[in-house]
Length: 238
Ligand code: PXP
Image (cartoon, rainbow, N blue to C red):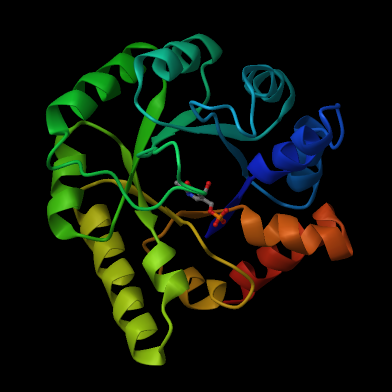
């Protein structure tokens, strides 16, 4: 299983003082040196962390792949089609949320998402849909023409009892298997950390995990390269 690192919160810290440091591009290069196979950033409508120029600089600089997380709005779709990340991951976005709160409702929004997927494909950009581990959403994701899905692992990460965690893990396993059966690439992410990663890393159908917050928090203590190496090591040894 591969590891992609979300660097949004490097930009959160940079924006706290309105200057240039820490630089998300330097952080991305450190993640790559430490074994990340992809860099993820979320260009939110309110630009609360990553900014347009960050995405452009990342596109021009990183050596692995750039995964642009985004809502399927006209403005951000336009930016993505110009900058051409390797992958866009479409997520729902609400202004007041602290972070992405759940998966897309692809069943309800199939027509709109299908149109967006086609536009990305016309620009040579692969598409992943961030969805909850629910079979109907996975079938609908397949029907949009997207080549990948990212399973929302937030409910698993937030589980407060062993029973609930095991249940959520089972849903993720089943979702990963169904996604693969339907021919989708399978990513997973949200809320994954140094304690809960091993069980997810043992699911063979998951190609890649996308992790941000836990790694950036650990980086404060041990440095970013060490934090990424530690996470990479846990995934490999699982
Ligand atoms: N995947 C998606 C679709 C997300 O929205 C986020 C959060 O930006 C992540 C993965 C990473 O989540 P975390 O920061 O909790 O590791």
